[in-house]
Image 1 (cartoon, rainbow, N blue to C red):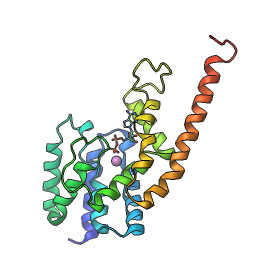
Image 2: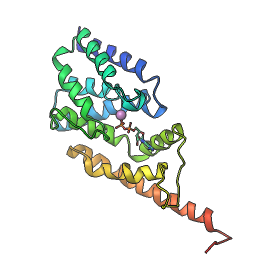
Image 3: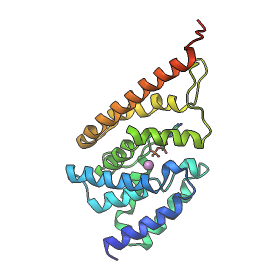
Image 4: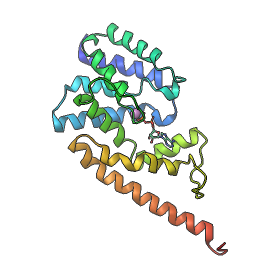
Length: 213
Ligand code: ADP
Ligand code: NI
């Protein structure tokens, strides 16, 4: 099987799986991560481009949020698919990358400096910031029925705005490659511009005309 054919089959395999995910994890997220990951590797030339592409396509295949916490079934399916489709040689490497790629993975194992991992992490993180990142965050928040914002900081809120502070604003400094660091600058600035405008409108809407204090 040639690489084109393997990529096509992997694409189809992923499309089927992510149908059950939220729309922020739709096919276009995968496609962007794939293209941005390829771009990063073209600039940096640190990894095998085919492995990068396969890992990007598969990076959200196993997601504990959508697997009822049981990720091992997903990895077993994945493993079988890779063996059946001529990817045995890169299987272990790709599986390690997928296990480590998530921001929320608190128990990383395997090779944490694998260039493929560094690239996929960067591409995935880049898609969580900037205008698209903001759109994805509010989309996810809606999917979870979370509130947009809670100005009462006493209440530990799980609002989408709080997600900016817990994750999105931290990502700029977590980029691995120089290419991604550069791409993150403008996107990060846009998060800050967005928040500034958001608070301005919030204040106006809260106090205009009938100040409480
Ligand atoms: P990854 O793509 O690394 O798996 P996640 O699955 O955690 O990341 O997140 C997918 C998208 O949903 C990202 O854009 C992320 O910012 C957003 N997201 C995750 N958790 C929340 C949350 N609690 N509130 C708003 N957006 C969220
Ligand atoms: Ni992703």
